[in-house]
Length: 94
Image (cartoon, rainbow, N blue to C red; front, side):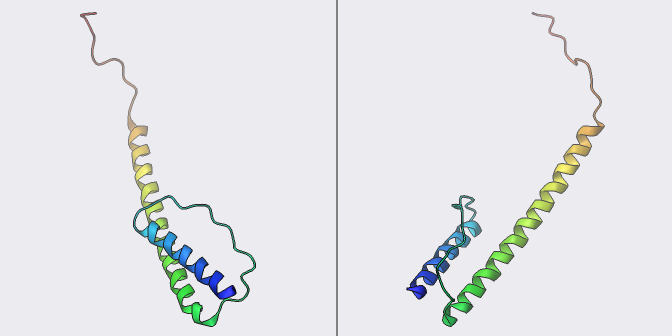
């Protein structure tokens, strides 16, 4: 039972990771599984690869977040230099 549960969990996590890599952003909420018992030794390599993939994805997301913050900072700097102006056009036909 424990092996089947571990395999199902790893398959689910791999599926979620593959969806994130493909650009999908909708992942259901995750909660820590209970009652799995110790991980079977032959699944440790699979779990390690999954962990490495998750860490790579986290690094990519962090780099994207930092780039976005840099862009937002640049946009805010441009907006801060603009002086409020009065009307540029006058609608004389109305």
